[in-house]
Amino acid sequence: MINLFIANTDNSWFDFLAAESRLAEVNFWWPGETSFKALQRGELLVFRLKSPRNKIGGFGVFSDHCSLPIQMAWETFGRANGVSSLEGLRSAIARLRTNVAIVPSTDIGSTVLVEPVFLPEHLWLDLPESWSSSIQRGKRYSTESADGLRLWDRLLEAARLSTATNVAGFQSHEQARFGTPTLIAPRLGQGAFRVAVTEAYGRQCAITDGKVLPALDAAHIKPYSEGGHHAKSNGILLRKDIHSVFDAGYVTIKDDLTFSVSKKVKEVFNNGEEYLRLHGRSVRPPERKADWPDLELLRWHNKDRYLG
Image (tube, rainbow, N blue to C red; front, side, top):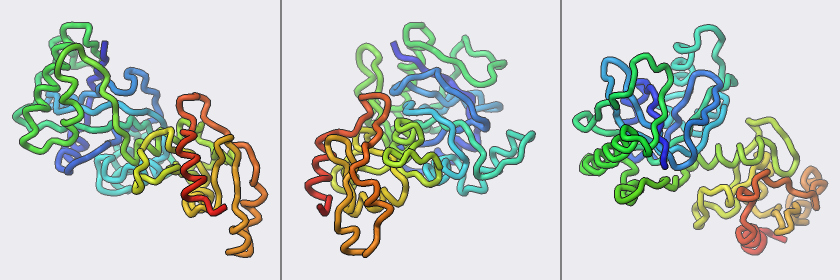
């Protein structure tokens, strides 16, 4: 069984992103801090275009949901927020939340979708008969129901037909068109990776337990440019300065999850006490064992990046 959530979708958000090319991920944001538990990773969020269109215009593969400050949402997703600037994002939210002042630190709900499909207008779909115009946020369907299964099949067929128009992400959905509907394994982009790692580590630096979100970064253990993946097992949440020295090889994390600082910090910079005092500290892993750092990737960093 697969769930699909038809979400009321702002037409300007949709149009902006449909005009972009080859998007790996988008931020389907909500104007207020809000939970979203309708989908699990790999299920589909479906774009129901608001009146006067009242059509289904596409979908995205659900990756994660969390609350993010507007500033971080912009830094993480940029134009994939459906606007061209941070001020544009703030203004769009302010139009929907008129009861509070909207500033860069204001939290919004961020539903991260990967491999989105924006259908050309001639392939837009009618809504299921069971859809009601009174629905405020959206409605969940299951492929165990006739409406849900029909919607699943129609979406993937429309995505297949739209390949001539260079719709982003279709290739990953092709395998799901045959047989029993199955979860689509989402391939994380850089933004989805940052959100996933940030949430996995409880928004705290794995070394210092610092909680100031703007000061934290999702670090790749093995860089993406060197064959590493945007996967939680290849990520660790670090304070930004620690991230920098980690990438440069002056610090590492041993496979027993202890933090190690190279003596070269002192030799090269005649400084570095703020890092040396952290030497030997236990690294706090995510709560879920499945999200822990991959030990082989840590060994790669120890051997091929750490300066010793």
